[in-house]
View (tube, rainbow, N blue to C red):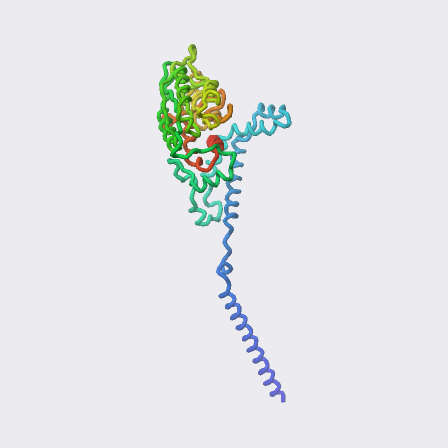
Length: 392
């Protein structure tokens, strides 16, 4: 009897073990099937979001830059600067603080670039996706030719910004004129080396914009005024829709130097004279039409040895200036009378700079920004882009 019970228990135990084994096998089979049906993205470790990657990289870079700025005392304010901020009216404090910081912008930008280039490549385990790494760089875009606005885009802009755009005459009917006055050699002032490159660059730009360009050189102030009166009287302006006037010479605060200028005998074409000649009373052919004035000339004095100054003043300071120190070269624009816009290469009382091998910094940046942005940006916006190019 006992033997029969033992045999029954063994049989039941064997059947139970077989059922458990079958259950395990079934579970493993289902798990395997589930794995085979799982999408690939769930089988492997999920890839990191590209935006998170860039965010992490940006935080690391910014932290390094801020550490370097603090370490090098770039953001440290002098006692005089602190006093100016303290004594200022409440509404002026933010502006004065911003001015103090902007004066250090070149040093700060150098710290940023140096930190960026010296970042430890192994400081992070993340890598940008190939698509991001291989993306096009706007700086690589060719800007040696003028980019024209597609006809469809032009029609769209005219429709969207009606009332903001001056009337544009048909290309086959208009007779656009532009004038470049450039003085390079002077009786009593230094030779403006590199000015020929400015003439070539501006002529090419204006011709690309559809203007017939007149170039006048080696003129006294009286001769410049005579040329301007003659240009203002040209009949072609009646069938034109705009004009450009470009002046490149040595200069002082309120005008452009003629070839005979000296401290004892000034030879200056005053800016007021230019606006008077081309206002709506004296230049009827350009009445209610945009008149763009570009001035590459100093409006004060400073020192430069590697970079040639367009100031006629004799300068006593013997210290050498480098491009990084050209903080006073921020460009300047102003509106005078109706339909005028003037863009100058320097602020009042300051110099303008010229590279003897490449031409003027201002003219070079102006040409580049026109080539790159004129097809889609308002003229004032193009000028702002030129201004911003001098911030770093």
